[in-house]
Amino acid sequence: MAAVSFFFVRDRRHHRALPILVSYQKQERKVVKDVLQIYRANPPAVFAKLKKNINLPISRIFLEALELECASPNQFRLALESATQAELPLLKRFNTVFETVIAVSPLLGLLGTILGLIRSFASLNLGGLNGGNTGLVTGGISEALVSTAAGMIVAIFTLLFANVFRGFYKRQIALLQEYGGQLEILYEWHYQSINHKKMAYAGDR
Image (cartoon, rainbow, N blue to C red):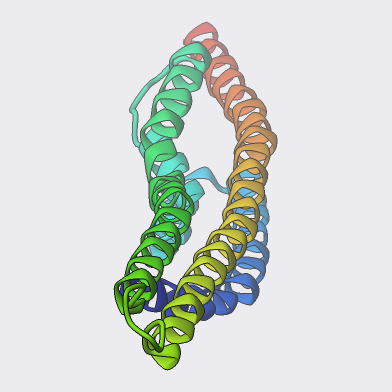
């Protein structure tokens, strides 16, 4: 019962994560739009912006790909994909915690139910005149029911928050694909522009 209560108290604190996730996504979207705008006008200047927001996964991904010197568009795409794959475990790191709590909470509730029933049956005195201590019997049954309810409540709330984080993860993947594709297009445009200038310069000589 104590273990179930511990999980329940911790679970009630997760409601703070909802506004944090919303704010986090707004910040990330604003940063990545600024990054693309800066890169479009002046590619070297984008490194300072990315390093300033290195706490964001998309900033780390873009920075790792852009730091690859003299890469062709195809090599840049591969670097972007590799950096994205490296970030995915960090984005999914809460899944194991949620799955564990969802699986364990009903089992803890069931354990509390069994212990409560054992306590109730232990309080019965079938051979006696009074039939046992009524207070202990009802107390054991009450403990069994509360344990079951607490375990189910924890599992339900944790499942809800797990779905919220799962949705956050899917939106992150969509964000990486959308803006990663835009960065690839800009990189290829700058790459071709530089090559054309080099060819023109070589032709003039």
